[in-house]
Length: 469
Ligand code: NAD
Ligand code: UGA
Image (tube, rainbow, N blue to C red; front, side):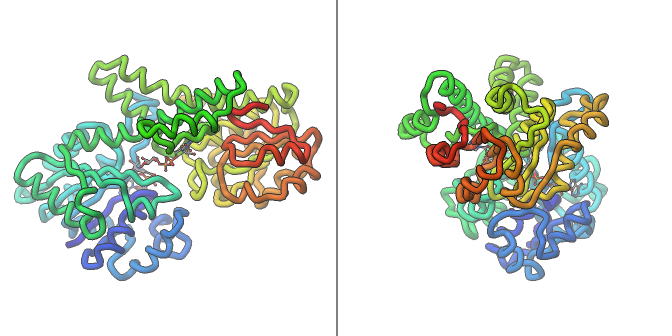
């Protein structure tokens, strides 16, 4: 059996590496149009940072795992084609700011159709709107020149989280496979089940109809993000009332119906998917006339924006209502620890908010490159920001500095903002930081990971999310 995966990104790369590791008799080729990315996958400096990934890639690469830009050849030869291309939010036209942009997906489908001389199972790995399989089916069928070629489409959404991707792939809570309830659909499901069954207990491989599988992915992300927005909303109330959000989270999390995971109040959720997938869900709801349902889910995104804005306002108001010309050290730029990914990271909005009020931010992150930070700080969130684009771009970059160690960021700073929960931030010598900072020295812990009592003993003014002063 030969598997090809279109898209060598955060999902395609790690997922296929795990398939290759666990199924040594299957040839797995990951293809991408991005030559640089493929070159990096073929080197020891992989294009993404994910604990444990390099070891697996090294074990399988050249054996039964390959990375290539020759999409036509490998897709043409494959029996199963995973499609793991990006599905970002549309930035212009109808549905801009909400609907999923399926340009890349359709491009992949057209490619599959044009090179197929044998029947294939096409697997939706990307997160897509409900009913995408129907549209893709039409593109495949109408563009394939060989009438004997059959395509069976399966939905196999990915639930891995960045930073723990390899562990999530090795021991997933479940694998979900949706397919058509026809003889050929069931046969295709069985084939994909047999791939995962190499290492995943059969009872954890769930099967469903296509639309349920597609919708389950959007729903899972919406529920996860909703928990964070819910606890973040409560964090605001805690600050106003003297309650402690960690104590509240612990108290409710011991109720087994609620559970204790995903209840960490934060400066806001980030990552490439939560916001995009909820907006996508809202758009699907609106498209079928469910305005109230769309509004309900949209609140999760609104609350997240509010939390980021609230954090910025808190910093400014604490620092005597002015951050003008003040150096502020930013600890962490990635959207979460153990990843170098900055897509939709709350750090972008927080830094931009502080700079708009005149601050100079000095960023330290153990995994994010200075180039990435400068790129993020100069890219407008939506294209309709364009009229101010060049002005805001230069203004932003003039006020961003990136350094390679945390002590340098603190030197001469008025405040430290912790925006990512990197473990190393807990181990620093904060007395040494304090000695180098302008007084009064502030710490704003946007992740509640530091020892606040100890910091106060040193002399810091500490603001923590959802905690009494
Ligand atoms: P990504 O941007 O890291 O990777 C996508 C890759 O697809 C890019 O390298 C791009 O060059 C390539 N590509 C696009 N069109 C192509 C084409 N026609 N032919 C060949 N290559 C093409 O994206 P990602 O983070 O891996 O996400 C992929 C999908 O998986 C998205 O739909 C996302 O919502 C979903 N998802 C992501 C995560 C995550 O943690 N990042 C988790 C679960 C699901
Ligand atoms: C998330 C989901 O957890 C995955 O199941 C899903 O496959 C993936 O999105 C996707 O579809 O892309 P990911 O975004 O990689 O994974 O990371 P999470 O651990 O979910 O964190 C997302 C954001 O929420 C981060 O910014 C994180 O710091 C924040 N978060 C998480 C909190 O603020 N509080 C929490 O309690 C948990």
